[in-house]
Image 1 (cartoon, rainbow, N blue to C red):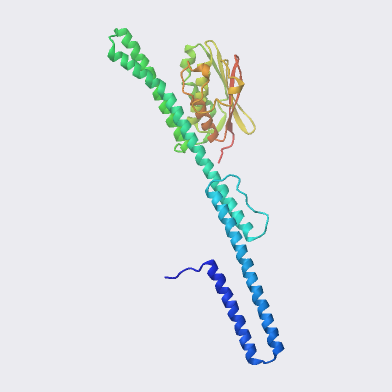
Image 2 (image 1 turned 120 degrees about the vertical axis):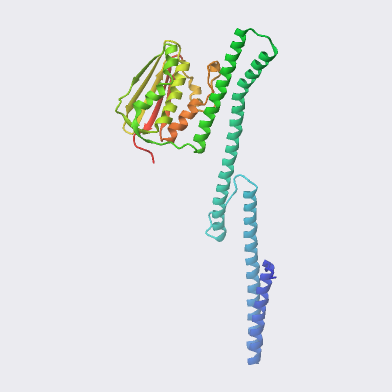
Length: 345
């Protein structure tokens, strides 16, 4: 089996070869001339060349050792995850070229490490949020079930408990369905099919599910949209997004209030305004309302799990659009949905 030469072995080999060549030169010179001046000059010259060769080898070895130490230290810092690793990118040397490559590797590893950390934190937050959302209805169901099993109740009271259990089951079912939609959108299992279609029909599809709750609260709903207005969008999922905004508008608008839906074509996008006369959103909460499972403390008596607006933003964003919100406490809110007039590739 062949053994690889060490660095020191290479240096010793080069030195020995250089010494052997010098010795051969002197032997040949001594063989062909007997002139003492020439012989002396040759000996001095050979010793000087030999000395310079040794110095060159020492300097080269020192440079290589310094390069090796610098490279090892840099790699150790990268592997250990040290922040703010310094790279020598100024010099046009082999070290500078290696440092440039190492810097790129370091940035890739750091970004990958940061992305993994963010994903872990996101998963932890999601698990915590899901646990919090599921905990209340499950606790209530256990309590209602225990009461029905352990106590003798009148038929009317039993019926009341069954209705309470049904409402908690419906809440869990809604939460599970919303989470499935959210998961499929985030992982790309569901792909939106964007194609030109009348936005009027999509708004009508979204309104169909909120008309009855709005009528029960005597909320007036008006629509101002040209039936011939064509916008590239996914009809099913855009209707889902608009429904989530409309559903919130009905929930948080008091009886006798108003909700208006207006669609108009702008130069680059079509704007859909959903305006209500509800309780409004405090300015400091506007940046939070699109977060997953976010709900204001003062609205926990209203049914919901805090996923609707998050889903809405995901759906609109995946179509190249965006959402703006304007609100004034006590006067109502306006959610503006912008969809591109040209299909996004």
